[in-house]
Each structure stands twice: as structure tokens, then as C-alpha cells.
Length: 213
Image (cartoon, rainbow, N blue to C red; front, top):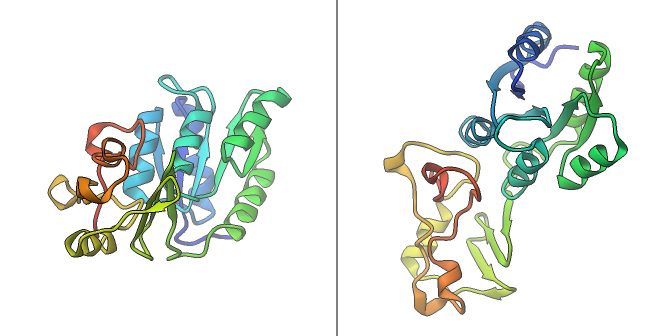
């Protein structure tokens, strides 16, 4: 079964694995993008907005479990772990961090393709507006709602306009980004926690502000 147009982000530090997965998935109609480190994975996920992520746990800069956890702070893209680790504890940690499935290496191509199809069927419908959570901060772009610790923050008209233009997961050029300095200190019960809050925790400064369409 071909999956024309579905974009898959492959995250693995072994080039041979990425090459094999690219060839296999491309032959079945998937569009492929790659990353060899955790940092690249987060950047690619934010920039390319893939339909599914295949992720190894043993990345050179950050564990794949932590990458999954960070992605889940702002995206519900399906994530399948592909790892040599067979311990139950590793599988539980990955699933608890937000992974949708876990497949151990070596793996069968038929099983991998089936798991991809299942993950894509369960995925959030295209165009759905995600709600971002980070600690006590909640940001709902569709409703133009920002709360801190359950308390709604009263946005100024200009802040409300900016909030409505934000689309999580799409990062454009530096000039087209909208800073999270939307909120005047007077409207925030905890101003030091609101001002400059990053929607991409742990991602380099380039991604530390809200993108706009």
C-alpha cells in the first residue's frame, strides 16, 4: 500500500540505517527527510512539519526519549521508536514520553510499514489546531487563549491579533517570527514566567519564539 505525499522524518545517527529506511519508504510512496542528532530532529520537526517521525533512542547529543518528550510539548505528530534496546524499561519510558509505538532492531520491513500505516490512521486530522502546554503555561492558538496556572491572561488587542496569527510547528525565517513577548507584564500574575517563555524548550535560540504564518 503506497502512502503518496506522507512525509516521514527519520532520526538515527547511523547513516546506513537512514539510507536503508529512505530507500524502503521512498519505494512505498513516502517523502523522506532525515536527521542524525537530537538537535537536528527538533529543528526538522519544527521546520518540515512531518506526518510521522521514526526515532532512534541512542542519539549522540540527547536521548531519543527526551526528544520525544520535547516534541510532545507542542506537536502530536505520530512517533515510532526504532531501537536495538529490548528492555521493557526502555519501551515503557519511550511510550510514557509520548511515543506511539516501539519496534526493535532488527525489524521486518512488512511489520514496519504496517506500524506506520496504523500510526498514520490514528493521527490528528490535518489542520487540527494543537494546544501547547509547558509547565503552568497553556497556549491555544485557535481560541487565542493564554493561561498561566489555570488563570486566563488578559491580552491587549495587539497581543490578541498576534496570537491569532501563530501556527505551532511551522517555523519560517527569523524575520517572520513573532516573539512570545506578547504579554504586557501588567496582565500576567507571574510576569517573570510569562515574558520570553519559550515554546520550544531545549531547542536553540532560533526556535525559542513563536512562529507566524
